[in-house]
Image (cartoon, rainbow, N blue to C red; front, side, top):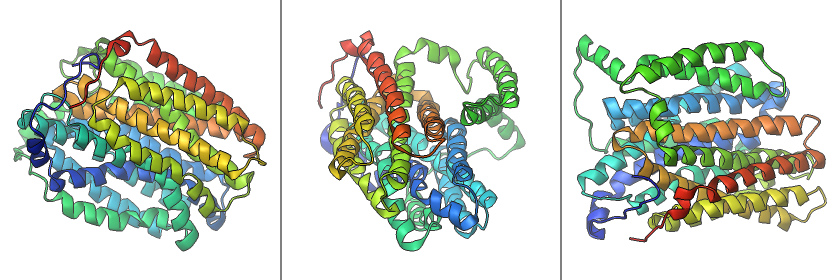
Length: 472
């Protein structure tokens, strides 16, 4: 099924509510929120961490990039494992890893230990979204639903990417009131609650414990493909984070890893990274690209605007976090009502336009701008966050093959993280001489170009323009 043709919930609404009871959906929402919240909550803690550990603020960027790298690799891997060994097993294991990362980070005394903690958190939180999509898709099929369960996907949108916008406000309050360690320690109570709820999810079928079964599972998940993908992604991220300088070693590793991986994946009947399927499924490919470009803009605002507000505008850590609160509020308020209608075309167009409008607004800001101008920019990007999450997530559900929804959902997040990683690279370049007005305006120019690309990618998509969404 593509985004050209949409089916809506055909089962009675009462059956849908019974199928997706709160005991089933709540742990999925909590688990899916862990990754985006942890991605952004660190933003307001970087300066205090640098001060206490006696390192430069630039050195603390590894705490951001390490989670992005771990997530970019682990998201599709977790999705593939969920398809093969069971979504509940992978989901619960991920929560345990996040709990461990919170403890390690909360007790860490140097940047290396904190980096290990962020990697653990990145690996663990990566299980949430793809596992949730696998469980939702299978439950919908068991209930006889022909189309996406819009209300459930709406809740997942709010709990997922929409919650990323509340990370800086939460981080600002925690760091301001209790210190930077709570950017890690907050995971302990959240994961404890999530673990108790996740244990009530339907159990996966039992696994064969023989050695032969292990080899069979390794073949089914395409272990060599996963290793090749991980090597390629790691070297690519290292290459991106070094820009504008070129790390020739990383470039060489990327070429050496990606070339045989492509050869291997093209030969397999059930590859981990289905290149042929991606090439033939234009709706899914375009969904990935739209998500990457839009999140480049959203996360540039979260991190770039945050740095500028603290360094040039003179706001405290707490007030800086609160300034982005409208972004999270608008995202949460819009996501679920839009998702209930299983819309794709309208939201992705609104996403492109709001991103372009917000980017122009960033170009007009300076250190003398009124506070209301910052709030308005935050509100506009809140619209972009909600509409891109809802539209692209519904398009993903419709375009991805049912038996590969886990891997496809993981790749959806991977492309998003590539956009996020690129945003941190762009922020480092435009703010290399300090987070001043000139750097902010340079960031705005880049985001306008990205917004135009998203708009063109949307309006020139003939299949999307023929799409007609109908409400259940």
